[in-house]
Image (cartoon, rainbow, N blue to C red; front, side, top):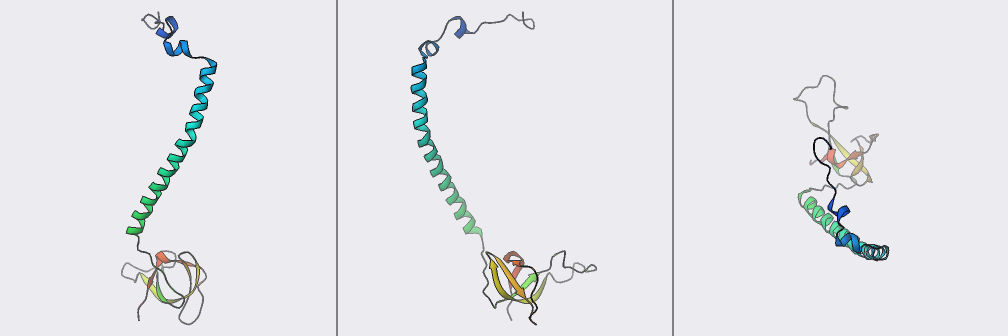
Length: 135
C-alpha cells in the first residue's frame, strides 16, 4: 500500500512492448547516426530562418527610423540635459541651446562640436541630442 492505494506495475515491466523488445545496441547506434546526419540539416534550416527573421526586423526598423546625418561645418542645436541645466531653471526655459558648429565626425552618429567663437566642447554628442539649426 502506497498512500492508501495499491502499487501498480507498469505494463512495460510486466509485458514488454515491441519498441522495448526490438531495441538493440546496433539498432540504437544506427538511429543515433541518422539523427546526427539530420541534425546538420536542421541547423541549416534554423540559420536560414534566423536570417530571414533578421531581414524582416531590419526592414521594419528602417521603415520607421528617421536617420539624421550632419556634415562638417553644419550648424546644430544641442539638447539641454539635466546635468547641464541651471539649478534654478524652470519648465519655461529653452530645451535647446546653441547654435554650435559640427567640428568633426567622431563615429557612427557621434559628433564633435565647437561654439561660434571656436571653443571646442569636451565630449562627443550623439545625433539623438542634436538637431539642425537654420539661420
